[in-house]
Image 1 (spheres, rainbow, N blue to C red):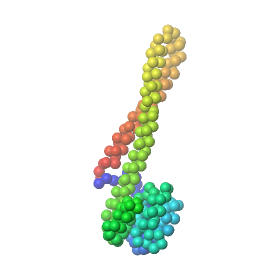
Image 2 (cartoon, helix red, strand yellow):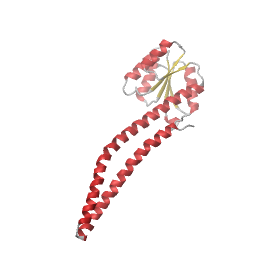
Image 3 (cartoon, one colour):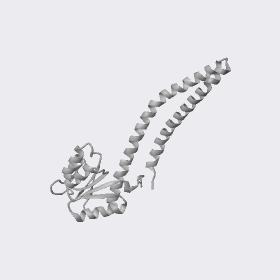
Image 4 (cartoon, rainbow, N blue to C red):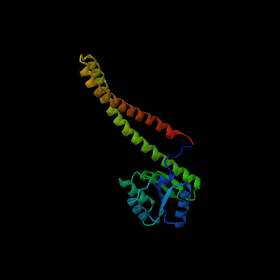
Length: 216
């Protein structure tokens, strides 16, 4: 089983359900798994919370008065600041059409009302792992892009240093050579340090891929 690398308490989950008994039940399940959980008693309350707080995942009841799960989902997906949030719908409706509609609207997953704690946590965990992997990939993509930009001028610089060092050896005056040697040495140290950084970024990409593929 693939495991989360960030601490579970670092993830913020919002439970949106108009039934207090359900809110309390889902909160207890998620609290017990170690997540940081907040609750909202209506769709409008849930949206207000989302607009003012950082949330990674929303567990939302489909059937609610005022703003139901579908309407909340549409508002989340239409808001650029919220559309990255994972939304898992809670529904007692087993209709294929309803589920397809919610998926088209942007739901990431479903849980059936009355689902076990084990299934709920497994689904939540799966989507949070996906968040981690997406974040790691984005960071590595940016790092890789900058590494590629650095590599070419670094290669030119290394070649120029070789030429400079060869020219230095042609100087007849010991004084001329001694004056330039510290400069050449400092340039070589800087180039070597840049090369090490590039290699570390490359190795980070390899190790991160293995890191997220390891099994518990």
